Length: 372
Image (cartoon, rainbow, N blue to C red; front, top):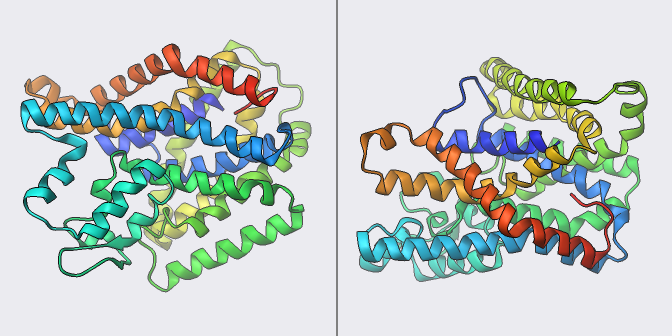
């Protein structure tokens, strides 16, 4: 499962930086939605490993927030230094521009800035607009405006982290639901999603940033975990695990990503990409359980899985920095692959020198035997 997580994180990098993978891979959108399913899977798995709901909330908040605020502080520091010495404000560029030539209203800027500290609410910013003189209002499509409010998010990709936090708030309630109730919830949210597509809401941000629709994927991930006994008994029973098997799992994971992308292109041309994407996500999602069952006891796999969140946090700023400050032609022409290498390297440094020890303390503090 760790390789799957880091592979999906690199798919997001591949989508943002430009193609560096020599094969077709899932888009950043599809990778994020797959992460939502994985999140539901893990939350169902660890539901009984906390002594209280309060411990669950505290532990999940620390796991999300501590790496986030570390990266936030570093990004703000580097952006400020770059602005002072090179006149390139990087992640703070929208604030610098709006200060000299206001294009967004004060309310929109302040609310967007506040969500940088709360994390919660960053997804809601994608459904708001506040151009100067128009006031803060709802928008169906933020891409119609040249100065969207999400430009004021210091780590803009963390709109998905805000969605994750909402999932965690609902996880204890969802975990208490019976299988049939959870199936009905997934069905209702899926029907609502497809109905929205039919009535014209088949574009960004509705196709993968609207919390109620993504909640259906989270709940589906929970159902996959609950089907664990069937998969372990009838699909992977008796398979002996070793290094060669692990390498084959990694290769198979990338191959399935290629198949997913190719099927999405072919089915998307016929039925529409939003419809094809949600269909394929539901078809491919059970592979999560197989990947987990085969790699659950692999320490190396767990290690590389821990790098996925730091990679997700750092990659967009690395891309932005390279595009803004790179001068040698070699660097400019190799930004995609350099972004991927730096994202992984810095994620490993962060994990090795800080996150690993922090996670050990977190596990001990909340008395969890084994935590995702």
